[in-house]
Image (cartoon, rainbow, N blue to C red; front, side, top):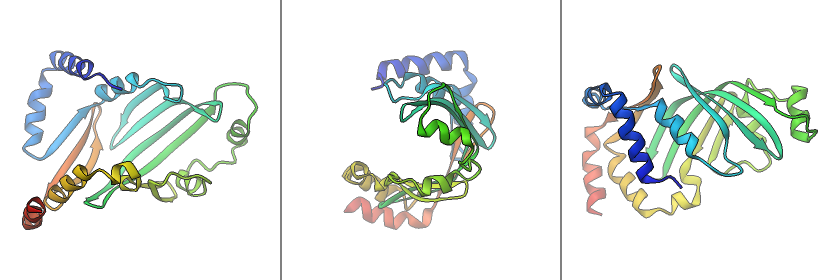
Length: 213
């Protein structure tokens, strides 16, 4: 579990080294645009511990996408996995948190001489990595949160995860906020990932009704 004090210390240290971030953030906020430095994502990735946690995580920008690379354990087979990830659609309501993701330039490399079904599958080239959605679609134990998978696109609905769906506080917040505020786009530049919000004043009445309830 992440230590709040460590997060605060890292954030303060980053701002001291990059004081222009405060001015940039204030300017972007007027346009409902909020950015997260990629350095913070790299720091967070380095804090994740555990046997199944990804190792040697690399995060870079390939605007408008992000490029991720990490060493993972796939059923006892160490792999270096890499892909460009672009979030192309986000739809939020009280009953759904759907995120559409494009996965491109997917690459897998076996990092040991171990002979296993996974290593043989990767080395054979039988997987069509240009269409990872098709691979995910036919997984025998596909996570419930993955509601669509086709070509290079995967759609995740976090409300399909029982623990999230059972969170009454989250549902109430979504009922109040989703009618008036949504996510227009998520993109990157060389050093940041940006989320652009979109306001919908016409939904104010619905939001007020939800707040009263």
